[in-house]
Amino acid sequence: QLVGVTKNCNYPPEADTLERVGGGTMESISREKIVSRKPDLVLCKWDHHQPLMETLAQFNIPALAIGPETLEQLFAEATTLGDITGHAEEATQLIAAMRLR
Image (tube, rainbow, N blue to C red):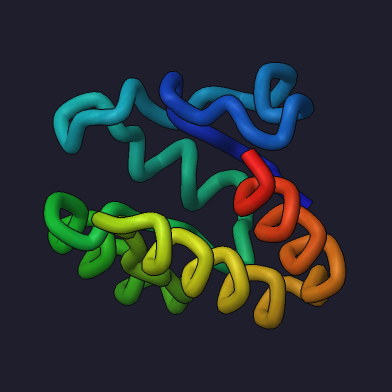
C-alpha cells in the first residue's frame, strides 16, 4: 500500500524499493512528488510537518501526524495505523514481536 517514502523509512523492507519523496527534513520533502503519487493517507511527523499537512489539506489528501516518544506510544500508534489501513492483525503481530525483543 505504500507509494512513497523518505530516505529514513526502512520498514517494511519493501520501503527500500519505493520512490523517495524527501530526505526527512521539511526542506527536502517534495510536495509535488507526494501529490503526484495520489496517496490516500500521508504519515507526517507531528512536531515538524505542520506546513506539509496544510499543503496536503489544500489537495484534499488526508494526513496523520505521528511521532511516538515512548514504546507504549509506538505500540498505540501501530495499533491505530493497523486499524485505519486494514492491517490490524499484522499490527498486533508486530507489536507482540517487538514486546518480546
